[in-house]
Image (cartoon, rainbow, N blue to C red):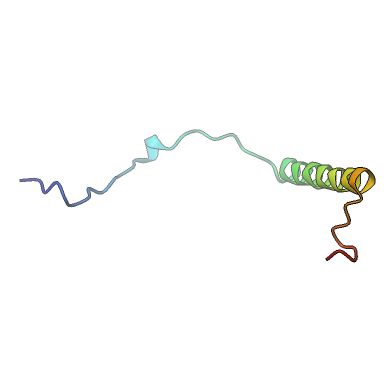
Length: 59
């Protein structure tokens, strides 16, 4: 008899793995650079419009 309180193991086959597209290292680096630029632009905008100084004397 199967014990309902005992968790059953989940087994996967190699065929169950989805086909994922290959992502090149250049694409990853380009996306990181884009994210970094977006953060920098946001920080500059906050400093210009709201006198927000994350590294100023307020801290």
